[in-house]
Amino acid sequence: MLAHQRLRWLAAGLVALASCASADCPPACGVPPAENPELVTKWPGWLFLGDYEAQDVTRLCDLPDDVQQSLQSHLNARLGRALATELVLAGGQLVDRDALLLAEPDAAQWEWEIPAYRLFFRLERPDAGLEAYYAEISLDAQGRVIEEIDLPAVAAQGGELQLVPLETARMAVRALGHLGDLPAEIAYRPDLDTLVWIITPDDTERSEGVMQYFQEVVVDGRDGHVVECLDREAIE
Image 1 (cartoon, rainbow, N blue to C red):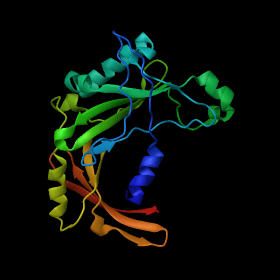
Image 2: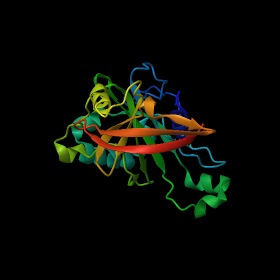
Image 3: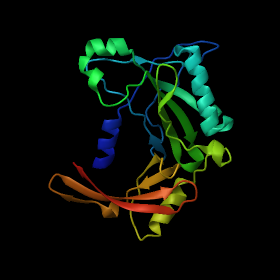
């Protein structure tokens, strides 16, 4: 595993959630390990809140009715009903603000808005080389969005999520003259409002002491063109 990938995965963290069976409120699918090393997975991140441990969200009905309705309305409006319906709850965190302040009194001075709910939704596109994309959204206690879901607003773009196959993205990188392995990740770029493939050609990697230097080639997921090439560094 590349050092920069390992650092990202450690920073993101993984959430494994218990299931609660219910006929009218299906359990979250959880966040299982990747099954196919040939496909890409974008993992969810989780909130670290000091000595406070957030509760697990294992079903949508763990949320109040008004929050569920607000969430569904927002997802339909942003993503369109077709894409919103594809999303499967994978889990999340529920933050009790009063309990948080008891455990972490300094949280009252934190310079960011602490969500009441942080939710993860799984989306799959195996034919494009994507095993799982865990989209994340944060809500306040009334169900208002604090942190937008990291998926394009495709409801305003015809309602279809566009994602070129990973191999198409790799062909664009090879056209730049890169040889060898082309490990890939995927991310949402809010400035472009699109998913992008992020490819790290192994022929750009070099080490100097504890430092590792490499290049990321960002490929637009809508049409496969190279957006930019970024020089990166990480500590091994």
